[in-house]
Image 1 (cartoon, rainbow, N blue to C red):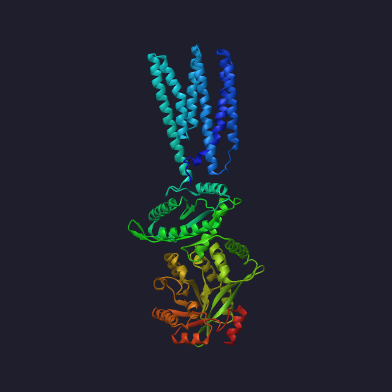
Image 2: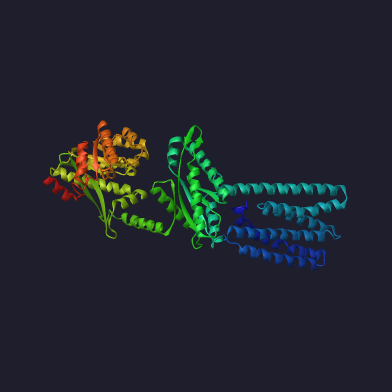
Length: 616
């Protein structure tokens, strides 16, 4: 861990070296002139030569400093600078003692003036180093006090007293300057809320650690609190801030036990860097053990104001042993691992590795190509029939497909997920919606009337500020109000928890256009009953994972319960993934309204769907 309180003063002291050298080399020749007037000049020349030699040492210290040095190297460099500064200022005391031994009283006046000037300069320039400024100012002012006392006159005692007072004033001013510098540097390098180091602080420390421990291993943890935004939005920022402070205290207590360092990067993201370890195996083991302790600690109950809170965390881990990479590279690795935790369900730990890197590279490749898929006409739609109990096609679900010129056929599970995570789902979703409405308009114009068409709508798309205007434009442009077929927007149950109030407002705003809503993948999310109670939907779609296991009595009972709930709430029930006649017979027996699956038809292009409708 960082033990030097002046971590941010290295650059400051680096600049002061040059200032002191230029100042003293500019004033030092004055003693040679004095030597010519009051002395033999030999002592002054020897003294100035010594000054020049020390200046060469200072210049080397100035040149040897680099921002890329490790913190340990900077600490050692700073110690040398302190010795240099003390000796450099002390040279003035030598000349003071030499000149007060002269008979000429004017030489005494000059020696006193230069000694006082040196003390003032020392108090100003060395203020960032508390112990150094005390030692240097004391060493410069003490000979003056002794000199005045030695005169033995009343006026000299008074001068000695005022010299002591001046010394105290200089030290007081240096102390205030030091405190101000510490405060300003603390604000620049620390988080105002938790008092932890901030991103700037952590990056500098991490870069130093990477260079210093190039032959050893350290682990970096990137910790992101799960659903913190929900707490902030529902309970207010005051509660959120207090929660962040409590989390930071828990992390600090854990880190201190292992000599690790904690920082807050911003928002609800924290970073922890370990001490160096000798082997990769030991580093991995300790990273896993420490990460699991963090998960357990963060999940312990929080009592803030009148609220009892429970949160979890997603942790990405990067193992550091490559001096060719910098702090940002390792943070990126940990960030990749952390987002892998998020996508897998949160509340877990993932360690970055080459395989994960390959996955991310593939995702990025998909992301880049997907961005141009629409303009290259690579996105197309298929339509999967929805069948009623009389085996009649009464509707369809619109399914997006992507045939990339580079990647070939890309699974919707891949490209929809990428579109969601990057925000491209807004543009992609609008394209899919408009293409589906175009198709429906063509079918209506040819007299092919369906009861319904279901279109998947991302909740991110649904909550976008431009979504309602887009739907209104399409309704006017394609005269949707004249369609015999009703539009159903399908939203996934797990996504409805993101912003329930806004979701309900948006749904109610679109219902006036005769647009209906369906909860897709019903039963795979949480608090399902509360959702269908609160959200104004007209349809439930039973997830295909339940239908696939209907031969299991418990699973069959669960599906029947879903259908019963739906009927009691006067909702239409659609079963997805029906692939066998046995499944279809069971669903008919429990009075499921609609079926969809390969038993009836795979997803079809529009022209093939039209042919199927004609034959049906």
